[in-house]
Image (tube, rainbow, N blue to C red; front, top):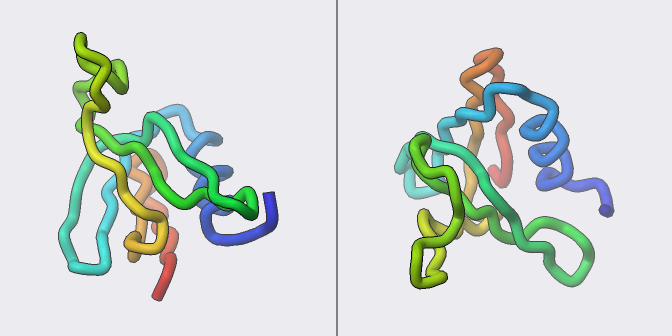
Length: 92
């Protein structure tokens, strides 16, 4: 991957054991949960994250539809990692 903020977020997130996070979006909505997947763009950067509530174990329901929501990386203002209480600021 070309170094960018999505790579920084990916490395930090997947290095933790407790992957519970709080995301602040550009519209100042704060959501709490975990990433269960991602989508790469043309340049190998992550362009979308698959985000769900804490209690969800799988990314699809019994009919094959995605559970949770897709969040565009460009819409994320900051991510707070609850394991170590650190914050990464993105896309200012």
